[in-house]
Structures are given as structure tokens and as C-alpha cells.
Amino acid sequence: MGVFQPEVSHDSQSSSRSFALRIKQVNPRVLSLAGAVSIVIALLILLYVHGQGNKVINLVIDGEVLTLETREALLSDVLAKEQITLTPHDVVSIGLSDEIQDGDRVTITRAQKLTLTADGATKTLYTTEDSLGDAITKLGYSLDGDDKIFPSLDTAVTPDMKVKIVRITKQTVQQTVSLPFKVIKTADPSLYKGDVRVAQAGKPGAIIQHYQKIYQDGELVSKTLIGKEVQTVTKDKIIAVGIKKLPTPVVAAATPTKTTTTSSSAKKVAATTNVVHKAGVDFEYKKMIKNVSMTAYSSEEPGIGTKTASGTRVTEGRTIAVDPNVIPIGWWVYIEGLGFRRAEDTGGAIKGNKIDVYYDSLSHARNFGRKSRTVYVIGPVKPELN
Image (cartoon, rainbow, N blue to C red; front, side):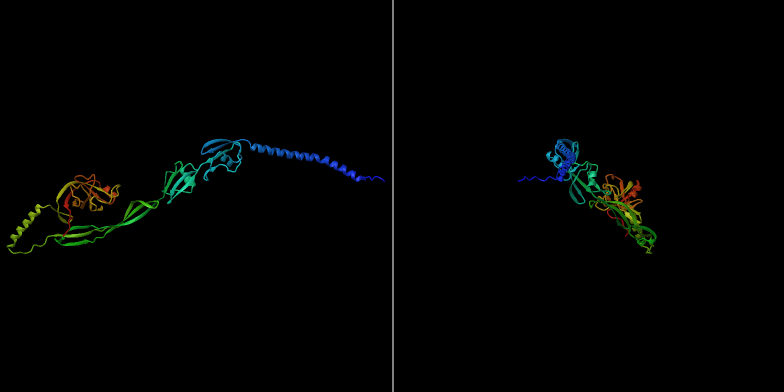
């Protein structure tokens, strides 16, 4: 029996030689690629090791510098390890999830709490600004016109600061004031004694007063007279009073003796009483004061109100201030060149023979200056024509 021998062909031997040749050709390429991969892996390992190494960073909190040495990679981890907490309103120069590098400088600005009262509401706000002016602007508030803020805008922000904004509004309004007319009595030689005639009908006037109102947060705090103008001119009522002597009646012979006696008696009484004829009126006075020092005042002066010492309201053409020891309060007087006035007010500087005449207009009061007049002190009743 013969031994079976495997068949060896020419093709099998050729394939083995080709495979060996391919291995010899590929090995250098594989080795090069493997070397490059090894280098990359080594670099990654080095970078990781370097990242896990110690890093020194500067942490600045509200201006204070804190130098830290850490092996942490993220800022949030560094703050957590150092037990540094942040509020939602604090400002950090980098993100909490950002990686930190050796030598980094991280700034943390703490937010300050403000209690702000404005526009009818009180709110708790937070700011990282240094000055109150910058904080108010950043928070969306503004000051208009005459608005006020307490404390001032240049004040440095401090913890738990209380701030108030006061809104100021101004309004100009006008008010019409009626002016009563005066009654002037004049002597009329064409009329007999006892007869009167209305020579001119009276007509009240009117002035328009302009006021400025100031409101703080909607509440009226002041009202100031800033001007006035005449709307209707006052027309005084003029009454003509007869001064013409009545005609002498024809009487019996015995009558003249009696009449003469009566006339002489009347003249004697008149001679013993203080009676004068002024402004068309005959009146009796209690006393006459010569060389009285006259000045003037107005309610438009600072500190001067519209209410008199006697409780009445100051009225131009009527009110005067006197020394009650010289002229009793409530009494009427006649002032040469001015007419009838009533003692209704007093003054610290009005002592002795001095009188202060009231005027609505401050300019009129100042133009009055200082005068010297004769004054007739009459009494509590103003003289009127019968």
C-alpha cells in the first residue's frame, strides 16, 4: 500500500511568499501609527495630570484680595470648598461652570440691599453699584424736574440703606376776588342842607389772583401768590350832600327874639364840642393827634398774614395798625389825606403816635414811604350822613 502525499502546487507556494512580503511592507506603517497614538495619549495624560495639579488664583471679594491654592477645576467647586456662598444678586466676573487656570483673577461683587420708597410703594431692591445715583438709574428709576431724593444721588451705597423719592409737581391756578366799592360823600353847594343825591352809582371791581400750588407725592404742601391783575375796575359810589342854607322863613315880630336866643345857644354848644367837616361829613371827634408817623404794610410780606389782631380780615381802605394805648382797637379815625380808617391791627414796632396803613400790594406799601399826618380819633361808630 502506498503513502498518500499531499499535493503541493505551484500556486500555494506563491501565496505564502506574497503574504510574508505584505507583512514586511505594512509593519512600518503600523508602527508609525501606533507611535503617534501613543504620543497623543501621553499628551492627554500629561494635560490631565497638569489640570489636576495645584493652581493659584486670586479671588477679589468687594475689593479684598484672597489668594487661594487649589486643585479644583471649576470655579463652583473652588467656592464650595472655600465655603464662599453667593446670592442671586451678586456679580461674578466669570461663570461658575467655567474652568479656572493657574493665575486667574476672579472678582465677586456683593449686592447691597436697598429699601426704596417711591410712587406710593416701598420695595426691597439689590444693587452692586457704588453710588446711589448709579444704583437708581440701573434699577430703572429716574428723577423728573423738581423731584427730590433722600439721601442725595452722590451718596455712597451702604448695607440696608433706606431711600425715598419724593415726586414734586407744580400747578398754577387763578382765583377771582371781588372788590367792594366805596361810598364817598361830597359837599354839593347846589343842594339845600338835608338833601342828598347819588352823583355816581357804585360798581364793584374784581381782580384775578394767580397762585402756584406745590404738591409732594400728590399732597398739597404750599400755595403762593405769584401775581395778580385787575379784571374790572372798581367804581366808587358818590353821594352829593347839600350844604346850601335853607331860605329864612317869614315869622312874627316876637319870633326873632326867640330865634336869636336859640341860634346863640346852638352856636355856644357847637363851640364847646369837637366837630369838624371832612369828606363831606360833619363828625365829632374825641381827640386830635398831630404829626402822627405814618407807614404802610402788606400781607404779601413774609410772615404777615391776612388776619388782624382783632380777628378781622385785612382790608385795603379800612385796616390800620395802631398802639391800643393811643387808639382803642375797633375805633374809627379820620386821617388827613387818606380818609376814614378803622383800628383793627397792632404791630411790634407800632408804639405811641404811629400808624401802619394796610395795602394789598407790597409795591404800594413800599411806595407809601413815611409820612406825617393829623389824625382825628372818632370812636367805635363810623360817621355817616343822615
